[in-house]
Length: 187
Ligand SMILES: Cc1cc2nc3c(=O)[nH]c(=O)nc-3n(C[C@H](O)[C@H](O)[C@H](O)COP(=O)(O)O)c2cc1C
Image (cartoon, rainbow, N blue to C red; front, side, top):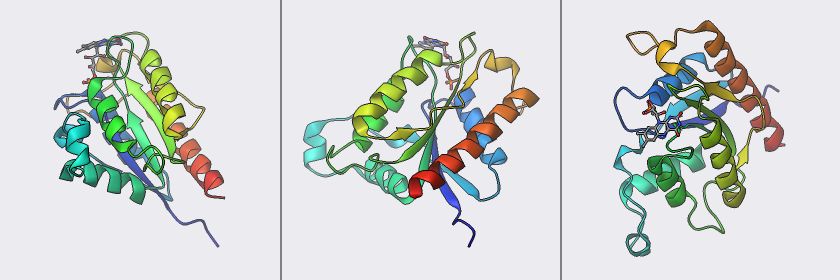
């Protein structure tokens, strides 16, 4: 019997309309292989983490984010790099999703990581930091391939479509590897 389709939840750690990472995520949706679907979640409505608020119950956008992660077989994160690290928007959303630590939606969840930057290193340092965060949340990031989109402003067309053929191929390879990784972990 063929494997059940792999459902992926994608999110980008940037809120701005013209975000390179949101465009990269849209490219992934377009390039998803057969047997994979990618839905996206917009982090804009997630408030700043506050333990007092959490104690009253998760705000609706947080509950929706956690539910969407639980409903997915894997997550796909498009991270910008801010000051050599993960942007606060993304870290904050992961912090909410990591609660409670004993039973969070992130535990055991396969994860693909990619990122785009106008600079020359393509979010290398942010991606490594994200892998470190996923150690504590017991999330299972795909080890390879890395998708580090450097000089990203040159790789999308005026309509925001990923136009660079090599980068499109890297994204395809990542998605196929994430699919295999998820099926392997599904057991
Ligand atoms: C506060 C801040 C810090 C940044 N630090 C880095 C950095 O360390 N490395 C890098 O490659 N780009 C850095 N940038 C540039 C971002 O890569 C660039 O703004 C990128 O477009 C952000 O992603 P987005 O297009 O998805 O919003 C920084 C930008 C901001 C606003």
